Image 1: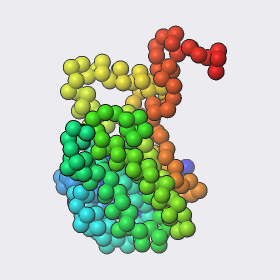
Image 2: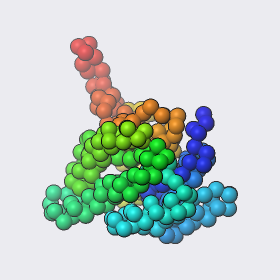
Image 3: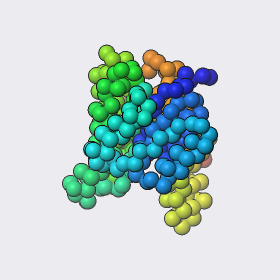
Length: 272
């Protein structure tokens, strides 16, 4: 399927690794030009050089998005380089474990890391998105639906992103700007692998988590998140807006009985 993204300009935050990198690669594979905003200069420049050697554009913009000036600079540099913005993908963030016990300052910092820059980037890009009748994709998390424990700031941020997705979809529909959110759950990223490596038995821990995922008893891949994100960003999904799409193998919503390796999974079937 041709996603009709040739020469579209996409700004992706946190595009140098993990899910963000997967999104960048999928966009470029479909003909888009990408501005990648990331804190790490080494990773961003390496990715830029890689695509430059192939004659493709992955323009690196260094910036810590907890700084509002960095958010504005990212938009301005993207416009200066490419002359427009068609797609804005808010992806950067971190599950920083800011809990109830950590206090208001830690909570506020978590919102800066995970929420405020989503709003700021859309605000600063708004006029360009109106010109291009563009698309906004937010990357959220199942944590805002399921809870996790010990991560109030991250959960609040991701819940707010769902709310903003619906709000912006209403606000921007008159300008033909679409807004959607993609929610991953258990996705196999380098960070997830690193966290599991710290467990006493990483292989067992991974297997136990996989058993909780109804579809295939496996982790979602980065490529699966990226494919959905880029499809939603493309003209192929031209009448889809205000949607919160779970790409999670059924982890967040399907009945937990379906993950039990025993007769428990058949319980209740006669009466429902």
